[in-house]
Length: 331
Ligand code: FES
Image 1 (cartoon, rainbow, N blue to C red):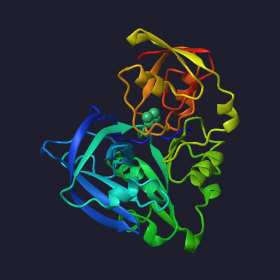
Image 2 (cartoon, protein in one colour):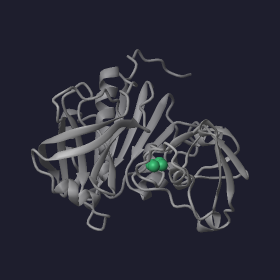
Image 3 (cartoon, rainbow, N blue to C red):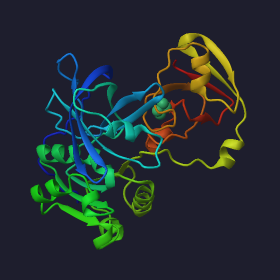
């Protein structure tokens, strides 16, 4: 029998996504190669409301936009905080964040939430490395809502795990940390081997952790697992090499285009001058989500849940394709 716990509903509403002129208030080292950056609005106005799991697009150069989870207190409308790991072999975005200093201007857009904390009596949070950032705000919210929760937090070493000490001190009975050099990898079999009633699992971290958690959650109820990816899922090249051109009708614009298999629906729409917005262009941020009117999308994004993909109601036009020869989009 499922257990019913008295619980306030979790915060779900995000303010309207908007372009923001921000200024850096503080840059603080919170772990090896991890800085937390506190941002305010340049005009001193209140920031939009956000809910745990939301992220901010940060423009770090003409062609560099990166998504970072908001990890501060959602009740603080004056400040947003992000925490960023320096990626030595990355594409330069994290290096630019690490070079920010107090007073620097930063252009951003947000909030957008592809990783919403749905109401539940219990949560099992699983974080790997910098994947702790969205989980941090979720823990605050789960506490506020009176939910039961546990956190499994893994990282390479203690000193590489941002916010480890604060979490362990504040919630000693709920937080289990696993520095890999001391206690090995997270014991997912122990944590997930038996589905726990009324529990949602939220996981964020590197791809091997996500893949292991997905595999361990196969016996769990459908939709019990929610994950967020920092990097796009790898699509089998045999799938993309079999693509053929499709016809795409942009119904609201009254335009129909033939889109070549080597192109993307997004770039075809941009070239036709349609009012599309995009950010990551690799299926992880959700900016280009577009409603599907007719046709069958071939989803290749890392944002939509399996249920959302199966519904076929929306698609990410930067990376997804079509199983049908024709798509009609509400654009
Ligand atoms: S632009 Fe980020 S998902 Fe399409």
